[in-house]
Length: 149
Image (cartoon, rainbow, N blue to C red):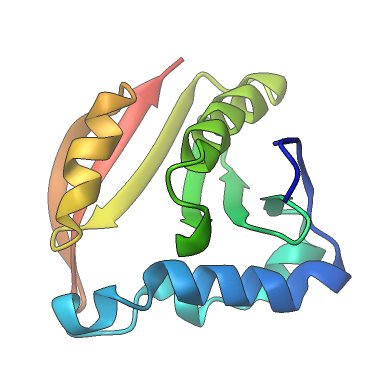
């Protein structure tokens, strides 16, 4: 990858790499949470076709899945390939989430993370997200966060 951390909408040609990055980023959680993380089972082709997926890197090393709602932008998934950890990719992706929300006229970003993904419970507050609630949905115990922009 170059030092260029520009972020662009994913194309159909990116789908295999979107899946590879997502799987690499989330695979280690399977044993910890006892189920396959939702992003690994996503229909990446459909999300790309719907304009929800944004990527960085050549080859792709960072992936965002963003879903605009009426009053907020939902950060459905963020994934950084483990080989790219420590390069600021995750920080840049989170900055882009806010930029994208603002460009859509949305003043809030929402997301959730599995309660057993402990790292995220430190990460998101560090970037200004506040814990809204903990909710169990089906087999998923999730912490819901928001950030007002």
